[in-house]
Length: 217
Image (cartoon, rainbow, N blue to C red):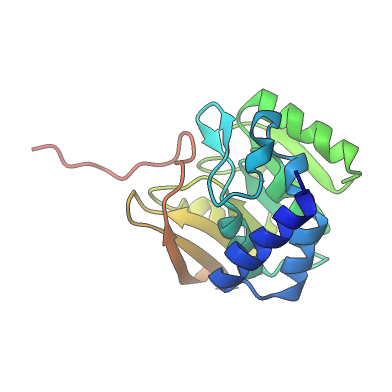
């Protein structure tokens, strides 16, 4: 398989048409090798417009969602980033190439261990892995400039909004299928947040995410 041609096609035929035009993001998608983070059995699908299974019912985001999320967050070299759901580690690696530090939390030990092995292999010294359940909050590592939830949530926990530094950004897929929306929340002042709805999609729900109250008649 010609990975470089497949990567070029992915960027030109999937990513750019989805309004991802930031040259820093496009350069990063060329540089960080997606195929290195895809499970071996699915490597031939590394550049296909689909969510790739990872086991435990988890999946990698489709490339277009990764690219739109990265473009919307505008990660800076001084940013501290929190990622909830390490998964394959690919999106973690994209973040790590832009940020000062990435703390990434994964509930499944085998996924965390495999991703950590890849981070070491690729020399990503600014990634710190954690194993645990971050669906509702992750209080152990302080506040952050960027927070990403890589699984969808029916309701966005306010605890994460309060963990954003002033000017901080949070990306999450919020709602219940088939009407989930990608949202960028920006901390404009202490206790004040602005929400921008970017696009609609459907994604795997984050394990143990907060569920809305249901009325029973």
